[in-house]
Image 1: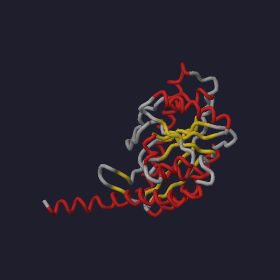
Image 2: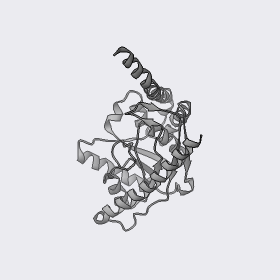
Image 3: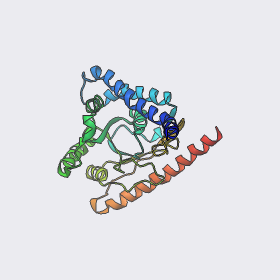
Image 4: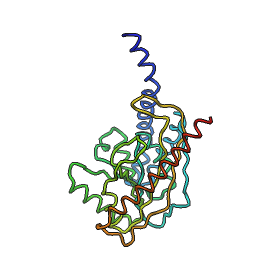
Length: 258
């Protein structure tokens, strides 16, 4: 029994160590940034320094990322940016997107606010925290943010799946982000992150790997209504699923030739 436990620990240690380092160092990066962020609270630019640190941290852990589709970013107007959600490592993907996407604002569950250092830092760079258990509060917060899309040309960044998903098929999309886009008549900007083929929580695997982040062309919501919202949701999901499969196949194929 003892030898088998030792083997299990040795097998799991790289994954646990890397995830532990990622979580700990991410918190330290935010902590070091706090004095500077306090000078201009609730400003999207506050995330630029932590984002730079997170990009370096990702590379130290063996994860490289590239961003494609920069020509599809238009900072002259607001939009609802939708991304697929796989793991805690999505923080690295956000770190690569933040400098190029415009005035980014992330929507997150309220529980994140109570994570030491990170929660306060997220508040300082303008994260919108919603209480999922109180639907009316969530709707009011999202309606307020939808007005900011027009007034301040914000990029409201959300994970429409609503929870982490490491499978090959995207989960059904929640309607909240589409209510915002249609209600404010703002375009939807799909952003697809390739599969983390090198990361598996169940198998306790965290190897070196490469990630492609592709910013796709905007999807217009002009003349869209709540009555045909399901059509907009399905169209967006199909576009993102097709791109997710394509990008994932590309990175997996490249990893096998290394």
